[in-house]
Image 1 (cartoon, rainbow, N blue to C red):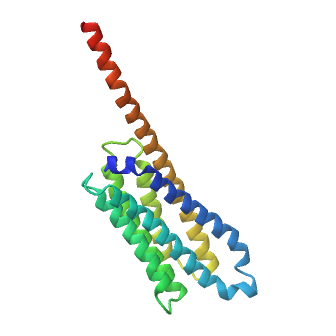
Image 2: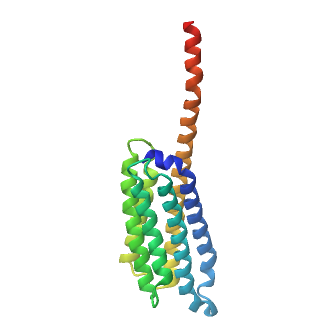
Image 3: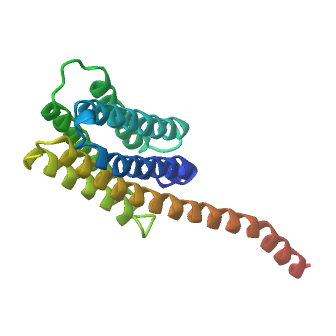
Length: 208
């Protein structure tokens, strides 16, 4: 699992950047939601932007899993994560007649599944990375966000957009933090690998 994530740290980084960009876009979009001329388009915008975000981040995660297939037994966690997010986005984009409540429920269910998978992946990382809490916190954020959407009375597009933007920002920051930590691990491994041959040569020269 750790080798798979280290090799694909940049895909996780892109996923985090995309999530933050998504959150910023919603924050910019929020002031226009109450406007009478835009109110009827707000729901379509909510469905479309989350669908595109889900499909894009899902494909990035699936790509990371495919690149690591056969190199570790835990690539299924990334694959399941990517498929869950992508399928959620596709359903929201293609399913006809969805109401605001239906979209909110689909987003909540998707976030719940992603949160559980991120928690499982974080537990797998505990043996190898001291910053596994970044992935675990991302899972906790997803599950908390899901509970807020599914249990709270989110009856307006503006409220739903606010919850989604906060979730995307917090989750994106956690994923970027983990990706940077994985990059540092990769650099450390490469540095150690580069020093080994020189150390062996020095030992041989001393023995001679």
